Image 1 (spheres, rainbow, N blue to C red):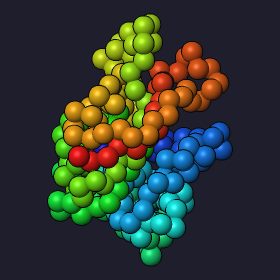
Image 2 (tube, rainbow, N blue to C red):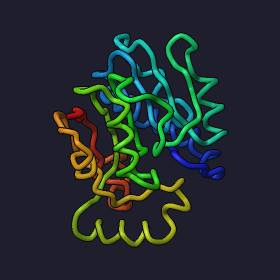
Image 3 (tube, rainbow, N blue to C red):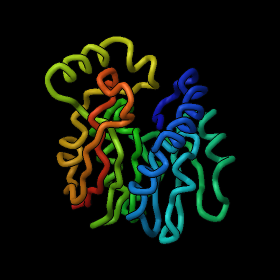
Image 4 (tube, rainbow, N blue to C red):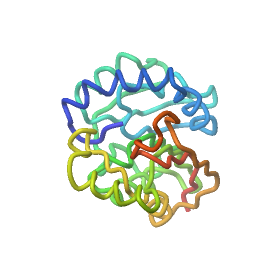
Length: 209
């Protein structure tokens, strides 16, 4: 979830993630990770909420998490056979060129300080034809877009661990050299949706060109 150190948010995120699992994100994580196979790199692993959702087709997960508190929680949640948790930043992933079959980014591209640089790194560590599996919230339309701009310029990144609500992440993925082959759009959570700036949300697969 995080890509830089936000100590206050790091204390809140494990509770938010656990609550989200009870409210429906568990099923979203299953859908997100169903296409994963082979060697996987997860960017911004947070407290390790994704770990229990990887399918048997995955042989190894390298989970990158820069925030010390969250990294420790992720390490405690990791299966020693499947998951290795490491320190690292999205803008300089600790991996060689073309090492991975899949990269996973779930609710993380909103918070990276340099989104284009992070996506360039994702492309670099993927083999040709490798896949980026993403679940993100993106820029809205009309009044929602205006609200997102105000929040992003004021309090939201401070309160939400560097998150920016109004990024055009789909366009950024395509600009980084990926072709989107699967895409779902939805609002989550459904409750109080008119007050939720982290919508619309997207879940999908993009192929490295």
